[in-house]
Amino acid sequence: FVNKAIVLAPLSVVKNWEKEVAKWLGSARLQPLVALGDKDDVSKTIDNFKSGHYRCLLTSYEVFMKYSTQLNGSCDLLILDEGHRLKNLNNKTLQCFAVFSCKRRIILTGTPLQNRLEELYACCEFINPGIFPNLATFRKVFINPITAGLKKNASRDDHSLAADRSKELSKILASFILRRSASILENILPPKHEYFLLLRLTEAQKAAYK
Image (cartoon, rainbow, N blue to C red; front, side, top):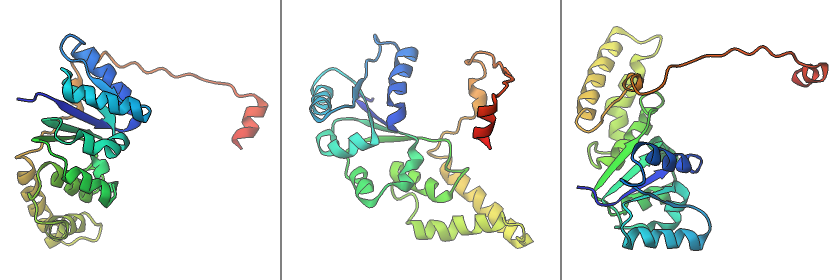
């Protein structure tokens, strides 16, 4: 059972989270607080979240870093939107997450497997600490053989080892990763319409593009 949840997102999409919660759940079911703005407003919002009946707090990664001590222990669930950003965070930020007390953690992301396996490792270490011994071992066992098998000059043995390690990694990930493709939204989203507009540029606009 989750009593209180905190959602961290890039600053540019925090307000979008607020709109989506209202759209899909409605204020009667869940009314989130948004912790953004100046120091006094943010601190007051956090206090209201901790002591009041509010069950969800939306804020940015930057705000969380500044107020992590005040927020510590205030939620049962921590959700990270665009969670692959963990790979690019500095050690101080990662340590802040490491000591943050929370029973459950969820990462939302669509890019780790498409980009770099180091990002995947960072996400796994956050939500399931210790599932892999360390990054060096993960790189030796999975990253290096898998990437070697993708090279143009890869040998048959390289391809075989890459396939075996990919299968092994997928088996491990399946125990705690839930994958959803875009097809799940086909019956929810409205029909897609494409419009093509032909524009005629002025001579000044043409010159600007040269």
